[in-house]
Length: 38
Image 1 (cartoon, rainbow, N blue to C red):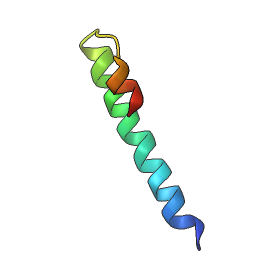
Image 2 (image 1 turned 90 degrees about the vertical axis):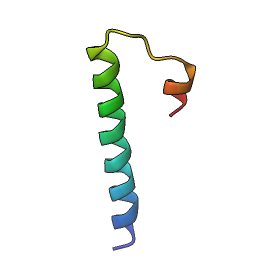
Image 3 (image 1 turned 180 degrees about the vertical axis):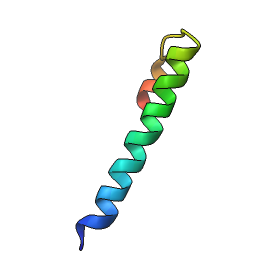
Image 4 (image 1 turned 180 degrees about the horizontal axis):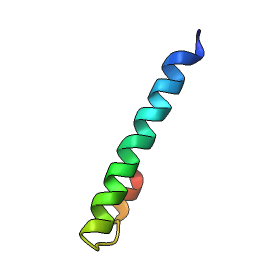
């Protein structure tokens, strides 16, 4: 049960990263230093 918050945070981070990556690819722009730091 202690792994549940960790797994949820990991899944949320992966989803948000995918959204940022898809937006960057859609606009055909390179990800900058700030985007990669996220």
